[in-house]
Image 1 (spheres, one colour):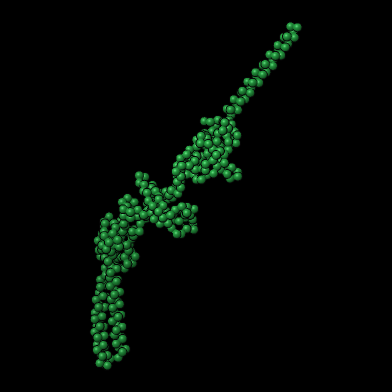
Image 2: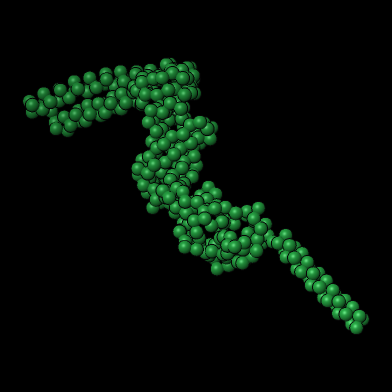
Amino acid sequence: MKTTKAKIFGFAFLVGSLLVLQSCGEEVKEEKEVDQAPLVHVSEIKMKPFTHEIRVQGTVETDQDIILNSEMGGLIMKINVKAGQTISKGTVIASIDASILASNLVELQTQLEHAKYMLDKQVQLNKKGVGSEMNLETAKNQVRTLETKINSLGTQSGKAIIRAPFTGVIDQVFAKEGQMAGPASPIVRLVNNSKVDIIAMVSEKHLSKIKVGTEINVTFPNYSDTSIDLTITNVGNYIEPTNRTFRIMAAVDKNEVLLPNMLAEVRVTDLYVPMGVVIPSTSVQRDQEGEDFIYIIVNGKSQKVIINVIEKFNGETLIKDSKEIGKDAQIVIKGAKGIVDGTAIRLK
């Protein structure tokens, strides 16, 4: 009888031990599974303003940046300006030797006086019925020819004087007094930077969003502390076939800092939402069907949610509001590549 009780007690003890070991094994297994669950970073849904910008590189340009050239050949007699000098419109910049033209002009004027005298005599003879009609017309033609030549020489003589076509600053003097100038020889560079334009080329996909009057912000890489808010004054009517872009321009009046050919960065705000659902762009993934989705955390597990992306900019994504995503939902922003829908996860 004692032996039977001992056996029963031993069997019960063995079963209890096995149950305890099994329970401990399951706990260890569960702890091990938890420790092996993917570790992810999460972020909360944010309701905030969203702005999208188009950023393109531009340059500073001006219509009043020219090189004045000599229109005729000759000796440079006088240069009346220096680099850095501000001059007014019409100021004489340089003069070319026109003495040969002047002597030719005197000779033609002498010939014209004689031709007019001969014409007057032919008119008198014609009135008396002595002269012929042919001689009269020849005299008239001679006068007209000489007058035309004199006018032509006068025009050429005027080209010997180089004047400023607008008010500006002499940026550089190329020629020197005493040099021989040929046709199209550069004399000076004249620049007026009081009014410049910002020019940029924009992709044609933004054509419908950019109009005359659209506001832009312009910054300059070499002037990091300079930022200008402008409005577009002209939108190009031609698409460049090589890069599929069109031209935009914004005028800068009363300029004191910018120089032609400076680099500029143009920012055009093409979308502004006062309040929308904004999530980090790192949380957005795309499945094999081409649909955008995110993972949210529900009861310690991942849940895949299909989203509609409106726009992305500067690390943030604006999406359409969805009933599946609550206002307090936690979105997986890092570590989502190793998980699928329903994966148990750990939060960092």
